[in-house]
Each structure stands twice: as C-alpha cells, then as structure tokens.
Length: 286
Length: 286
Image (cartoon, each protein chain N blue to C red):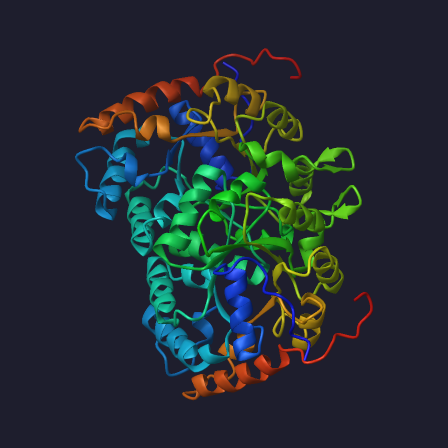
C-alpha cells in the first residue's frame, strides 16, 4: 500500500473532499456525463426527458464507484434551455457525498466571469468548474472566491491542434506549463487544479513534477485513446493520488439496450479498478 | 465621404451582412445585452420575466440604431435554466434584419465544440459566436462550418490581467497577434473575426494592420473606459469600417426609471452618431 500521503489542500476544500472519497472507495474514476441524443439507448425518447432519465439512471448505477461526476455542458446546451433544465435535474440526482465538476470551459473578463461563477456555483450548485486561462488570472479569480469550490484551469488539452498555442515557448516553458507554474504560485486562488489530457504523457509528467499536491483532471481515457492505469501512473503523484480521470463514452454507451444502466455499472467497475494504484509507480522520473 | 471600400467577405456572409447594415444605418454601434438583475429599472420584477421584458423593450427601442446585438451569456446563465429561456425569448425578439452575436467565449475539444456550435447556431439561431483560441484551430473549426455564420476569436482582451498570457512573445509577435495572423491564414475558416479590447490601442492597430477586411469586435467602450469615436478610428479600417463596437451598460442603464427604454434610445442615438466616421482618420500609421 502506498497511500500514505497527506490530503491535498485544506480540510473541507474540494481537493481534500475528492482525496477522501477516492481513498474511501479506492478509485480515481470520475464518471463523465456527455449525453449525446444520437447515442441514447434505443428505448429512450430522443428528448430532454430521455436525456434526464438516461443520466439519472447512470448516476444511480455508478455513483458508489465514482469519486466525482463531471457534466459536459456542451451536450446539455445542444438541447437549448431544456438542456439547462436537464443540468439542474441531473445535478440534483447526484448524492451530496459525490463532488460534481461543471465542465464548462468558461473564460471572460472579471465582471462577466463573476456572473458565470454565480451560475455554476450559486445557482447550479457545482463544486468545481473548468476554465480557460487565456484571459489571465484576474479573469479566473471570480471562480475562486467561494469556500469549498475549486477551479480547474486548462493547461494541456488532448486535441490534435492543442500544440499550436499551448506549446508556445515562454522562456524555457511551453505555455501550458507556464500556466500551471504561475497558477500554483498564486496566493489569491486557494484551490486550483489543472486539466491535462491523457494523450499528453510528457505534459502530464511536467505538470505533476511541479507539485505532488495539486489536483489534475486528466480527460481522454477510452474513446480518445488514453489508457486508464497508465494515465493514473503518469498523472497521479508518488502515492498514485490527485489525478481525477473522467471516463464518459465507454461507460455511458456500454450498451444501447434496456440494460444500459447495468452495462454502465459493469464498465464503471472495470474502470474503477484500473484507476487505483496499489504499487509504487515504476516508470522513470519518480 | 470615405465609404468606398468593397464589402468584406463573401455575399451573404456575416461580415458582409454587418457591413451592409452599418452602411444602411450609418453606424458601427452594437447594442450589448448584459442584463444585471441588480440594475434592472426599479419598477421591473427581479425575475427572469423582468429580464425578458427589460431586454425586449431595449431591443424594440434601439434596433433601428444597432448594426448588431450582442448577448452576454453569463448574465443570462446567472439565472439558471430560466436564463437560457430568456436568451431564447430575447433572440426571437430581435428583427431578422439585425445580426446577433452570442458572446459566449466557448472553447473545447472538437467533439465538444461541435455540440456548443449546435447549441449556438442551430438551436438558438445566433449569427456569430465569440470563442477562445487556447485549444487551437481544430477546436474552432466546428464553429465555422455553417454558411452565413462567423466566429469571433479572442485576440487581446480588455481586462488588466490579459497581458500575462496574451502578450507572451511568439517569435516577434505577442501571442494575441499570432492568433490573429494564424487565423487570417486559415483556408478552413471562411468568416473569421477577432475580439480586441478598446482599452488596447496598440493591439487594435497591430491586428488591424494585418487586414483591412477582417471584422473586429471591439468591446470596452463606456463603462470600461474606452472612447467610442477613438475606438472606431483605431479599430476600423482606412474607410472607418469593419469594427463592431458594443456598448452595453451606458445604454441599458441610462435610466433606472420607467423611462428606461426612451433613455436607452437616447443613449444609443448618441453612441450611434459617434460610431460612424465621415472623415479619413488622421492619426499616423494609415
């Protein structure tokens, strides 16, 4: 057993809540809710009601194996205002013991960012939000002034075109690393994490090397090609902790039949087991 | 009269529609709808219904002086799903002759960006959207594959902290300028514009110097301190064209009484006059 690290962050912080839950249920699996109307189980209506039923059944079937849930706002917003009603309904269906991430990638000037933060935290009741760093830290600060919430800043994303700007050199650092280094040095943002794609092992190692304690959100396992256990080895700290690994499509669409929830549970069980390291990672650089 | 430039972009493109409308009503004023519950006229309820009534009356009072409208999604989302219903209602209230910009600052991997694009264009019916460049061009492409729509990419924003990443040097260019230079060279994105804050005269000149034809969205006039006529002189091309200048708070909150719509109309008239250049700009560099 290698899980002897101290909890990241302050008591009651998002990071510490996630860490506690990961240890309690022994997994860094985050179930990602990206409901695609085209891929709903065949017996469900292609409507907002169908999406809500789908997501709430997935939540019911997987919540005891999820260290967190993540809602991808785009797939809800594609339903218009009904999609936002679905976000509200799905959020309410998640037990209060499970932290929930708003994967919304917001980023605007401070006055506007404050309104986005009210939406995500005060109105919708999420615990963490993904944001873009392009506008600088004053535009992120409004997401970071509530107790118990966390801001997850895009560092290195998993898409093919990400290198164009994220790998630009700033001194000796690529931009994505400068974002993470700067963010960790801020005293104004209490609970900050970073998003680094599972398809970017070099970036994962580089960002992790900055801090054992920082929480990383590492998307891209499954449909995008990343391997679960390898992702946690690279993204996690020396104790195999502090890397939230979302899995969406592999779980949501494990079956298109009436057994979709049971199939999702089965897929989540497999992923949950993969996303817990019992051994000291053996790759170089640790 | 200096308005003899050819229309930017292809016939039927967003850029050409905006250019035609600007010439027809002789202004580059864009009325920005950022409804703040705290600042609604005193007689209106602090509810979503109040916001919808407020915005639709502003639209009714100002649409003949607006070359475009811009909805800032954050201020609607701060009302939760009702806010998205308000977006839908306000969008429907805008005459089809006036192009409408979704100021949503989205930015995600291509698969997710495609869902955001469906939301903004297909479901809500907007004509243009603001997006962040941090994820690279493959993440912007899904916003650019519909006829008649436009993607407005953040280049240099108006907030104090923007320099941290946007002014990073990439070769000889600051990052914001590299974004614009790259974007203009893409053959995959037909109608692209850039967002450059009115508080950044050097950036406005630099981006404009790349192209006479490109459309710039130049926020920051009024409450943020930028001057209207000077902004159009800097951001517009040699003919004083192709710079959409949104004004929000100065118009929306011109009066907090029952005369708010008439006061908004008066404020919009003044701004509209300022945002039309009858003379060749005389500052250096042109």
